[in-house]
Image (tube, rainbow over all chains, first blue to last red; front, top):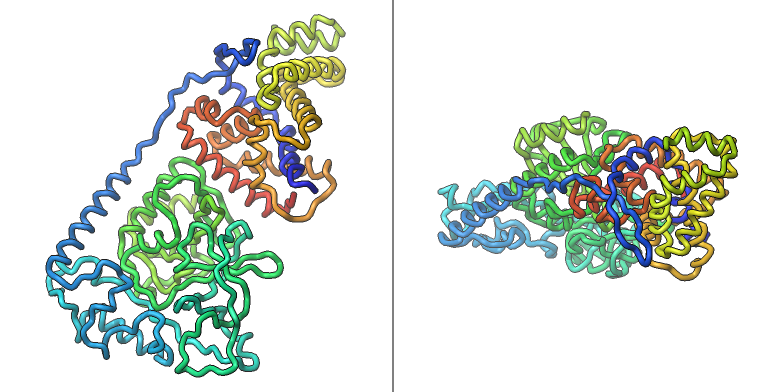
Length: 370
Length: 186
């Protein structure tokens, strides 16, 4: 079928809309003014309603929160040793033995995950090694010292029988390990071609570490429209389904805003759709009230600190988890999980969550339950 | 004259029915046609065709709301004319703009018998529109049925253009998800 015919079928179907719904809009269009179109005066519907602009008080609040964060950060920098970028957090450590392993470096490979986590705990708790800055005064530590680190993934890239079938999907690109998310999307989200992975390697040992473009499969890799390519890439399978892969390890995260930035999602931006789902049920939220609640939800997510999921006590059955999905203008679905007890996690970054203010979280749950 | 009275004239084969229809709804129907055709001559011709079709269809039809009945005839006729005349070149109009917006709803999937598809699709769209808010529904119908400009639709729905655009986008996304869930591939 020609592409234009498909859209035209929708118009033909619209001609069969229920009369009652059409009449509702006819009444709104009623009240007329005359307007000249070409040589003939054509009466055109007009509307006496005033255009109302919805107030967005949270924007001022978010700006204030951002200003306060900046003030703390600047104060921390004045006392020395605080680094601007969470991903450079590791560089400030003086003691190489206890510093967390740098991202993507060979030293990561072969380290057991619990060893890496011990180092991470030491870093976060400030045991043994402290940056130059004096972190005893919490007010001066700034948000930077509370960044959480997800250790780099230990991988085995050797081509062995049956290994590929058991492996989680992953590949190495520019020293970063991207891991499959089991998030599937339509082809519209594909951006630019990035590289072609080569699959597993015949001659590989742990000492080789991350080998560029190696991974559990060989395929073309693309960016995802609107999403930071250092965080997410994708591949498309033979059936046309796209799966995303995230660089969800060997990273440090300070606050929720970093996650949203990677995803290309700006709080308050327009032209996105919101869906909530639980189990097999899915609802599109369109009312102004609902969207306002969702905006506040993400504003709160943005400003609150990241926490490792292993450190939280909230436990919830998978069937009871609400998902809040943002579909961007590019058609990219960004799924967030509501884990209970005000914790929220981005689906492709499941080792990290953010604790929202109780009231903000409750409002969303109430919205979703209704 | 009330709709009921005008319909009665049609049923009595009283030729003043057409004149009364033109007097009450001529401009309204011309606007609908013009939104699609952007050509006054073609629009007037479409409206004349509408009167002729109305004469032929009443009886047996006895619409309770004449405006809606006539609007559907005019809309369909105008779209048919546009398709016939401009199959290979696009004339900018609200109809063609809306085609590109609604194109998001169609997938690259398989096809079915067109007529059955249209009716089933209509049922699905009707069902979906009943699940969304009144505001979103009015916007959708104003934009894609009446083919009013975004500016006009936003105005009579009482909101800013930005908000209308945003809400329409969300509604299209929701409709697309609903259609896919119901197994509609166009």
